Length: 133
Image (tube, rainbow, N blue to C red; front, side, top):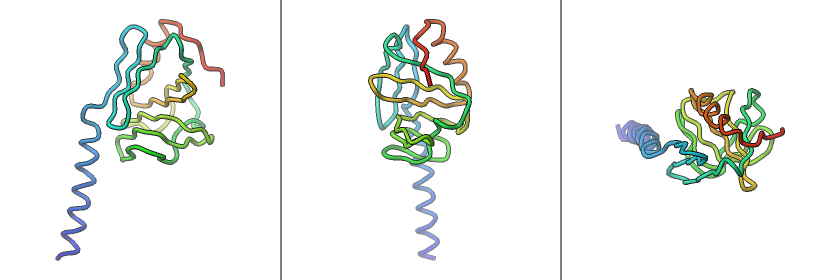
């Protein structure tokens, strides 16, 4: 009975942590500023100074967590990518291409969620520099 209780509490803790890690997280696009807010990091990306790409291959997807949150439905933090690069990742319910890749202040950012194409379309309207990869 004790072993079953420990397992049940462990599963409950994992589930609770996943839910609470999402609370307060989000992406905001205001004028030319893209704000990423997560429990791990708050970053404001000035799009005039960034390079942006909409990627449809899996080379830039995360494969292992360096620091942050790695759960079934939400990934946030620094991850090693399939191509060996290191990037800040914001992933919610979507772990495949296409996704948004941003290069800003010598850092890569991977943003991936079901409607990320709409975010890219809004960013593209202001004509930021395209990332040449």
